[in-house]
Length: 89
Image 1 (cartoon, helix red, strand yellow):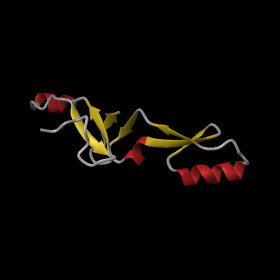
Image 2 (image 1 turned 120 degrees about the vertical axis):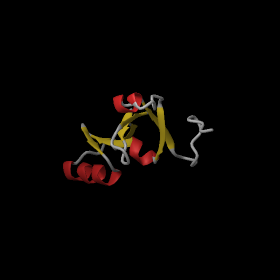
Image 3 (image 1 turned 30 degrees about the vertical axis):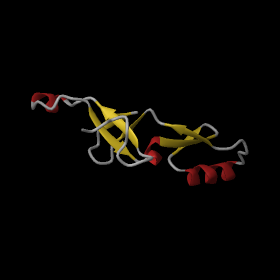
Image 4 (image 1 turned 45 degrees about the horizontal axis):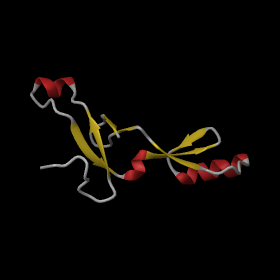
């Protein structure tokens, strides 16, 4: 049985989503879980702008002369790359 609190691949983050109306109609109305790479759940802040990867944040900091640093934050939800639906953390 799948345990949503323990990912099958160590280091992955488990996300969950509510069923869609069509899934409920067809009898698949349970909460869905999926594992995602931790890099999908992070974003970087430099100044007051958000970036998907640290390289672009660093380039922006150099270009604008910002020396305060780059903060790494965790997203509350992501759009799944395999089914396009929103998964929560």
